[in-house]
Length: 419
Image (cartoon, rainbow, N blue to C red):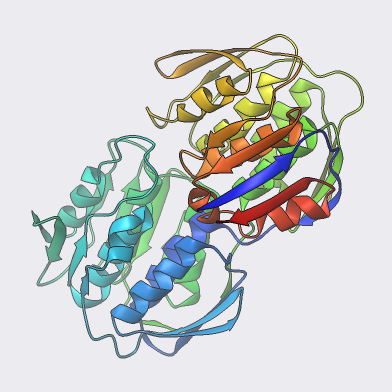
């Protein structure tokens, strides 16, 4: 059993380097399989368990995967031998569904086990299927696997019923090598959607409009390998920004794109924190009192759902009442019960939580119920009186590389125990 042990009360000070974006990397790695010639050298990849899973899946399909260093992979997909992604690794991570779009695009067929991932609510792939079928693919689900095949893929107009990052990226992958032009409307605008489009363009794709409501994809004949660097992780950066405010510290977060953090910066400023933006850094510190705020998650450029859980931990120790509304996932308040164990005053009503700030939290044993809930528990431990033990930290390792080392370097008392 692995756990994190934290003795709270330390003020975070110093600087921290942010890794490459998990949400971009887990789509870019499957997309590398679309290069029928040459090698993809992808830099700034986070050294996390989800990436390790994807490496194993790529190898199972016949790709050559060479780890140049912890944050750089060389992928040669020239001699892919299988279009069947049906391993345990596929089943346990949500982002494995990107292999459907990537394999369909290049080989016009794929068989991919239905994916798993964090238990944060129902996440259907109906919009993915709608897009694949509109491009001309036949989609069936048999024995827990999605099977897609097509004689040809043809460009078309697709309007998504809901804004979905996964569907936007997956259908964009499939349309890249289709014949003709595809127009995707009501698409997600998140930074990692733009990053995947930029990666595909670096391989020879013709994609315009990523980051807006409409993406236009002119199909090309083939893609070739390229060198690419993944964008910084907006969510990891937001987590450290919130931790700095929670401990009333002074932390400079480096290797970030400040524009990607604007919704987080705005909310922390509204609370009374100080934010200073540099070209590729953000300094976050506290001078004076903080106050409660209302937070509602929304697709980019709104407040990120992945930052909601760490943010709600901060609100537990801020004077006054705060209201957190979760508009993306219906089951993303599991961490609230863990915070209550530590003395938080929270009332949950459906997708809304009402938080009355308390003077302090008290350390105890808690569980990381999912990836971002794990980050929330780490922040809770940093500010709690006494010692906090966090169990089931495999969720945290899926998205935060060396989290204890980074917080230790900022002055936290945190260490990992393996029993």
